[in-house]
Length: 398
Image (cartoon, rainbow, N blue to C red; front, side, top):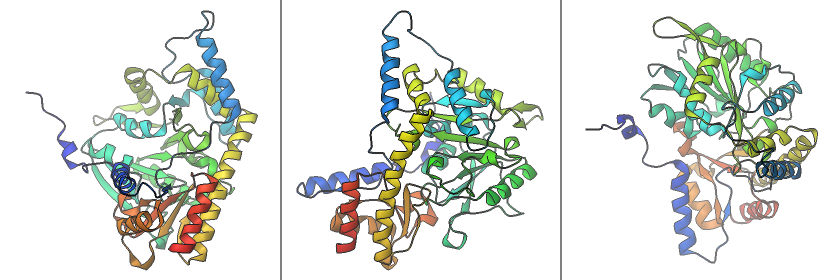
């Protein structure tokens, strides 16, 4: 008899955003006349940059000609995209070897798959509030999970303590859901902790393109020693609007080594390469050519314009919250505004209020963990028209 993975019993019955979708669907079915403004799931609304579209078209044309057709590509990504990413990192002072870059179909996939190279006996440290994928993917493996609390007292940026013991730690900066971002000095404390404990940091940099402060690193590798203790997971979903196009990359330093349970020292770079070549066939050539265009001077300029659009949306939302006297975090270096539910309301209670009274969809903080209760996430990824209308509804009806 085939037995299934017992650990799935410990997962919540449904994914957070599935719960939200069901509630919204029920509301729209009952009130078809109401316009619902969706500021919940962090999906982009602006189209791909023009130069990216042209690159995709050109690559598609190449696939239609015998002389330029390509079949299987390298599982870790084509050299041309590696070179573009290495050059991009150099622009903010981080040197990478091309062999340290692994192209994937997105940071979410890599967040889940990277755990393949770690022992199931490892203790995993996750922030609370937390992006659900960090938690669920380790529950699926049956690992011991401990939490570090993000709260107003630490600006939702927990720091390591001398007695903290874990083998793998997830960090996300700028953070999803809170929008908070670590300074270089704060990240240095995490690197120091990881080196002292032979731990590995899984650093989610999916929102690095929203950073505009020189004191906030775009990469954990801006911190000395990080290449001996960190893996960085990156995405073009928010940087370049690739949520439907799917492309990301993970940086696994050549200097990163750890021991097996039997004491043998292994390179995590080689382990990840082995994993990818076994279980992944690579990102399509057409998509990688589009991703290459993202990192061109023209692509960077066009993608930055889109990010500026979303940042202005965030300002519109934050101004409305400020006028209403509602405390919030994030929004500046992140597309997310993390607000404190007014009147000591619970986060799902506030979700129902916003949906039923204002016709606005957000994300209850409780869905991100115990410390998210009493908070609520709004995103700036809507259209300008819808964002402005949502702000007007908040000012008028909340």
